[in-house]
Length: 192
Image 1 (tube, rainbow, N blue to C red):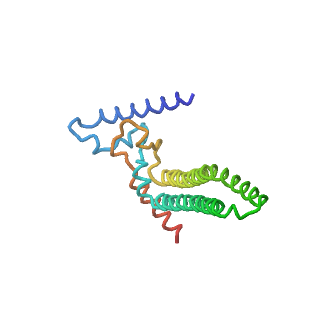
Image 2 (cartoon, rainbow, N blue to C red):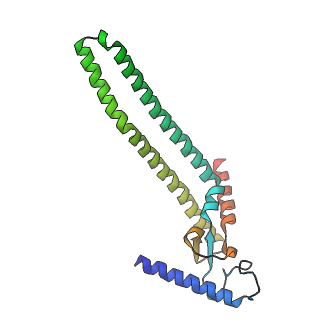
Image 3 (cartoon, one colour):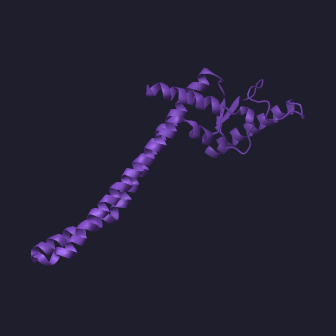
């Protein structure tokens, strides 16, 4: 059913684009006029999400925070490995001065820590992946909410697509800069 809906939308979009291009002068640049508003047709626009994410300050800030968080997790893991290695080397040097009971207790502790070291990297990577998913969700929710508000207040398009999911789009349908400008203004006001 989902494929049929997508196929239907694609057919409608292509039909609209063909109808609009047939109405234009054949010598005219097809990117110079936008077939967004046609009598009785769909009003379609698109957003270049690569450009949007590269210019949206909130996304840039969250990406930097994620890099910092990843570095903190990597540093923590490295500290744990170094502390284990130091304790292990200390045991190798001083173990002969311990009683048999102390040696067995220290070996059990080191074995348990060694096993934890094996899973620590996976745990830290899982934390980073979880944080990345959370931050990505925040950015996407902010973008979707803004686009809905923008559409209601301005153009009232029938469809707003992403450029990355489409084979061809007339450049005149691009509203990326307007969206980036609005998102950055909204984010700037929130930071105040």
